[in-house]
Length: 81
Image (cartoon, rainbow, N blue to C red; front, side, top):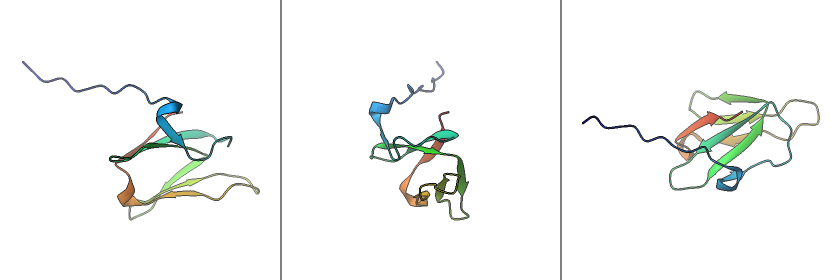
């Protein structure tokens, strides 16, 4: 019998730590970390450096500073909306 891939349920807001609550942005990304709580980050744009660090940027003149996640501090990142 063939093995089946396990499907994961979507993460709710109560299961993820929202890094910048109240920020209106174009999208939301979940950053999954090994043994740590998942981060939910609102941002207009995601940039990935050559080393693999994630930089979440908010647009506008009065925008909050970018959120940066080091390459060795996450497993993967997925856009939620």
